[in-house]
Image 1 (cartoon, one colour):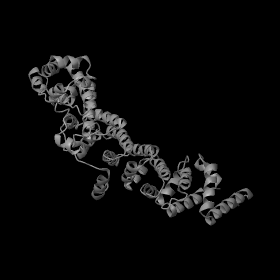
Image 2 (cartoon, one colour):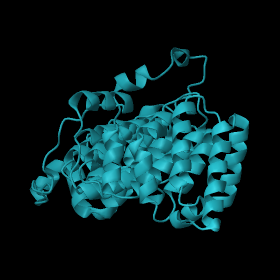
Image 3 (cartoon, helix red, strand yellow):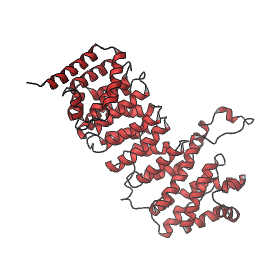
Image 4 (cartoon, one colour):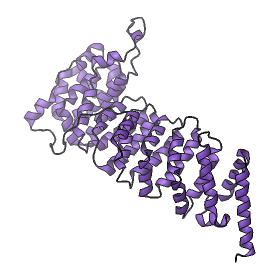
Length: 442
């Protein structure tokens, strides 16, 4: 027989559940407020004690109401926080299984794609997915099997809140760790995010890609093309993360393709520069504002990246010389339409001149003594001191250090280090996931 104390506790529980069942939206909102305030941070045994061993009876009511009202967004933040108290409680495996059995993961993922739902509510949904993913490998697999990577990545690209985007990054990072079955899917999803319009999403994707790359150990062929296009960004924080990832990628089989691509960016084609220039700028009466042409931003970033790579690895620097990087850097130094391209190319060339006597010899001969001395005196400010004739000399240079390297015995890096390159693809975060759907789950 149950004691009087136990009977009283059960009676309170039944009364509480009856109040919930009979309550409308406003009354339920008040009940949730009280529940959150009283039970935040409690363990599963403490919750069971609070509910007289009937915590699951309240949880099932919460999940049922969630399925009924999540499309309207009414009380959604309080409802998700209340469910989170159960799922995040210590020793809450039983609650988690009960939530998953009624399709909890699918509901949370659907919330991310609903336009009418507030950003704050979606952030709570992401936090619940974090709790589920952090519980173990099989739960990460369940999220991925529910097309979770697609939903999460699309939400990261579309979200307007940086705080929410950072929560999404934490979730993506969790999904790439300890998830061997689907880690490649997460990796490809991160690459597919790189062309998106959100600078914060690009920055966070690049950060997470560095982690994913080290875990997976192999590269996807599309990463080279995506990385080069990211260098068109106007946002320095995105550029920094891109260059950091490029530093990692030179240790993989895409190294040769990546270096070739960077060198090629130093000399944008006439077709590219002309198609990006508005027609109004062709009018001679209108000042020529070309400072933010994407190809010139990309040119400057490529010159900077090449400098970073050359300084960090002598073998990479030698390989760049064989790709005629000196010729391309000097051409970029002659681009009077974009001063940062001139500055970054000049700084990188200065390092190569200091490191390789053969480069110093060819650059001196091509520039002429006067321009060369000007370059040596202050490479960073050279762009402010040269005239149009000197800029033309730089832009039209014919320097070919690679021939001299062959005669001097400096050969390209071992073929085993650069295992060739693949033809890059051109993903976008939507088209990639559509393709994944048709191919089936991995």
